[in-house]
Image (cartoon, rainbow, N blue to C red; front, side):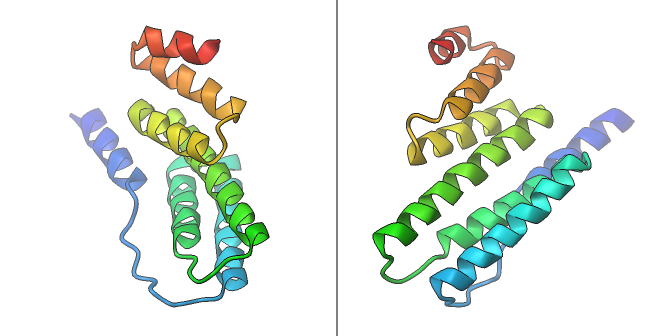
Length: 142
């Protein structure tokens, strides 16, 4: 019973929190906030605080999605690259939390930003293996 309660707390902690930040910030300001959250998430992850790291990665990703206005091609690429990196980091968090379906979803998102991302393909294959979806796992292994 206690183990089930702990698992539920982990699941709730790993769910994205509601975001109330609706400010209209310039690209560089919003991007700087995303990078700061990513750096904090890296530190949390390194310390083994996976749930809080996932929350920070999700917050950083939310900042990327809030970029508004006309972007230069360079800014657009930087934003897409960061989204891909954050999605891959979230996938790793969810893998460590044994939330394999969420891991697959975030790997798919990372691959949407960079189709040739071998780390995303490998991680997705590992998650498929844990989900006992061996055909998909083998396809990613190739």
